[in-house]
Length: 394
Image (cartoon, rainbow, N blue to C red; front, side, top):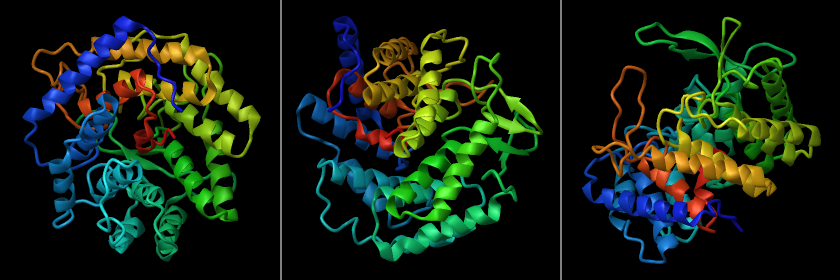
């Protein structure tokens, strides 16, 4: 049972109006991108949940067929822009009874992912092999494909540093426009340690293995070792480069809230009450700081904007039933509505694509109106947003 977030009737009416605008905006969609990150996979998820919310016929069949057509000539395998994300979407639609695809998914040959998982050197969730492994775990593929998970663990063994206490690895960053990439550690759900923890946890739940348990514990220990001191307004850096810690924010992709959610899920699974309390401490502290400018919330997107913040608080409220978290989620949903301020945007929304870059119209789940709309549905509905497994939040 999902407890809806918004209790203010006026705000509910505004959300319903905005959902209608988002739904209407799809009439103008004419792009060929099938991806989960920016494309049709997000549209299909929004249309499915919105039709369920409005108790009417789901009219996304044409988009779904295009997702299947993508399999004929795929140009990417990863989670954000490739087959792994599209498979994840289709599996979710069938599992939640939005569609019946008969044997179209179960007959898929997952061996095509082996080379990518084996050779990828980033361990990135959105764009690397970790996201592919997450997609396969979500689909509960048969044990004959366990060698794909073994390949992922082998890639971790190759990439990780030789440290007896921590599981850690460096990734490439571009800290400023036109700069050459530099190496460092990432602590965001989108690309770093928290996502590895949650995917390791899902794999451990599938097959209880001591090596996986070691990796889980060493990952958590590394994460906890980079905490800011008590004087900081944040708990964790977004990045650690040359021993310099980069300030954090509240965004899903790079922020304290995503880290706290990873710690919370790990701690709940292993019944580590001290870590549960620590995760809730993070959520509580940031509930009291709602200045949008302080946290540089530049748009309304799920990935790095206000809808992502709102949705994380909505999910932790439903985990804990702590009223403060519901109030905080409601606040951020209000901010999300306020950010629909662009006359040339999609339902008023435009997305941030980097400093000194123009704002962009996007339809997708992570950086577009599909994700904003999906989260808004869960704010006013008792329909559980199981789609947020895509974000590693459930």
